[in-house]
Length: 284
Image (cartoon, rainbow, N blue to C red; front, side, top):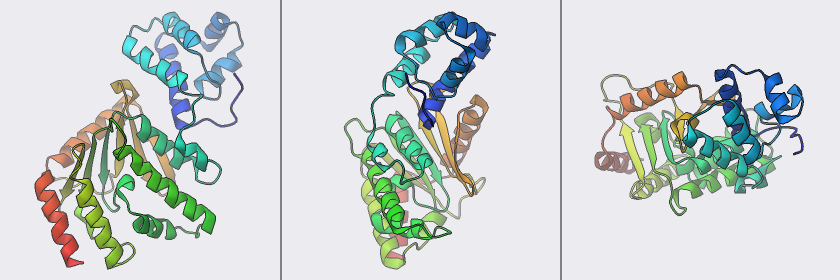
């Protein structure tokens, strides 16, 4: 397999899981290279996601590392076998930042999605006008072609909600995000009406964290939690002023599961949330 100049977040994750498996077995990269009949540099490239790995080689490695987690091994094989297939997001590569494409790929492969949003509407819920306004606030301003590409790519992400066998999508949205008037009252009202429509989909749950909620309200903790086919492959995606980050260390995953459950405990239920959003839209 040819060496990749850059790896996607999913390719890096596959390599990272193989590295964790090797290190847990106390085996060196040099010993692994001897097994594969190659050199340690290629093992490093595999573990960095820059070099693909076949199913046969992956299963040999798992056996060499004495990994008995067959569900994890099968999930990694699925990841490896899918590396040659390009998703819809690849059409935007070179125009839209790679991290935004990684988010789309993460959503595509997730079996369950949960998000917490404090100041913005979740990306897959956003209308075209709302999205254009958000990206229009970029500093420095985006070139017109990149702005339009980002808008188109974000709108296409919403397809994860409508496809066959769509994953459950649970959103905890703070009242602050609902009251932000991105694009003015008309755009904001249309955005809230769109959320209400989406909330009627059987696999979509939208729950509001009101200003009046007592206890921990999660300020500054926006995140997307994407569940993999096995828990070991769960991923948390967070935004910051410096870009997008993907977390998959077990302690991080556990902390964000607790955070989600803590905020869910103070959020309104689905029906009351729908009424709450409707009342805000009437005031715009």
